[in-house]
Image (tube, rainbow, N blue to C red; front, side, top):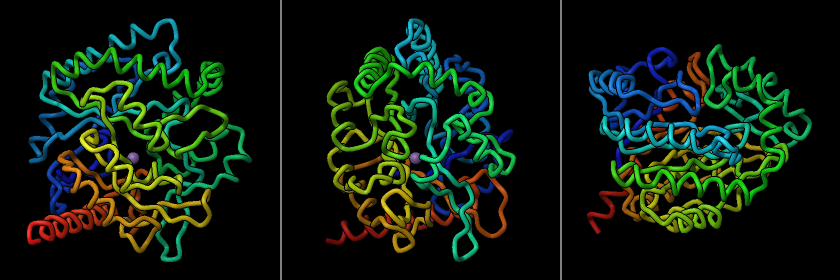
Length: 357
Ligand SMILES: [Mn+2]
């Protein structure tokens, strides 16, 4: 296991590489070329510059989150092969620069969905939160406007203003797409990129849909054990793998997180570990990482990762906004640093406990 933090690049992030390096146990970052558009080829020069910057700060570039998948690929549009070729070119360039982990998602129209970006908790901290009632009351085209005011002037991944201007058009593109068609398009994409992943030993790690159910009538497929295991079998190649995000799979309380980790043994290449606090099954908020602050048993999640021989990067996921920090919601320094330290502590205890038995 390598502890990492997500970093959006010096142009976009309020957190510096120097600060990240000072978090005990964190040795790498998960980053991206944040100003590229889905479908664009990432150049070797840009990848190398990013890697050099991270390494000059004494950190590893441990993986990419994300290389976004163009909607033409997700919808199986006539021009999808061109976009797949571009994706393959990007993977090749990443491989040439020694990068072996790529997180991506296959969510239609909206990336992750939250209805509040700054719900105030009793202790004065603020967190991202979700209520199904708020989503049901909302016109999907107004979704972006409804949360944009709480982004602290940042651009949030998957919610780029230029993308949200096209939201009507995007809904139109997905009109005929149901779960089975989306699944088939995902398999088509994976089958075509596996040769380049084999050649460069690139682990593709699909991020689950968040929340793990359909929103606004759009299809959602990466939501539970059956579906993700089905995908692993459909393209049975180790390079077709998983980002295990406890906070996303965990949105559905029917998902047994440690059991899912065990079912995916050998195919989890990257983990986002965070906690949620549920008020009702469809009203939850992103709590501190600490087990007792939320609903999940973080020890059992980390233990399942350890016992299945997980060796990839872990990152704490969204943190609370605390101590007056102003940053991209979920991506401040302080609470993610606390989360990283907590997870590193759990891991140390699990490793030593196992070694001494
Ligand atoms: Mn995640």
